[in-house]
Amino acid sequence: MSGQRSIIGRILGSKVLFLASLLVLLFFSINLVSQIINRRELEGEIAVYQGQINDLEGKNQQLGSLIDYYKTPDFVEEVARTKLNLKKPGEKIIIVPENINDSKMSDKLSVLAAQNLPDYVPNPVKWWIYFFKTN
Image (tube, rainbow, N blue to C red; front, side, top):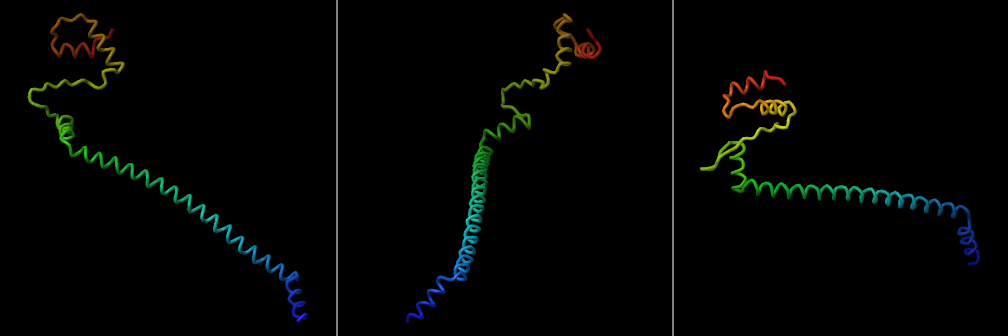
């Protein structure tokens, strides 16, 4: 019996067992660290995808409300007024030029205003003044 204890004691106390145990521990440690790194990468990807899901859900809600608006009579009326140039009975429409603030246009309008023209001037005369009169 004492012979068995001495063999077991020598094996447990040997450098070979120590090195083998160290290699096994190192192997499992490397695997553990790689699994931790993979898990963190996956959690990061999950967070990115969750953010994309939230953005898409927000856009989906916006599109849903836009669809609901397109179904309303207000939208139909707006399209009829803007794109089809329709009006309600008894309504008067005033068209305002968009580029009235253009510098050349405002200069020429000021020339026309400074002309002291009578109240009624025929359009051809106004055009002639607009294009050929310079001050």
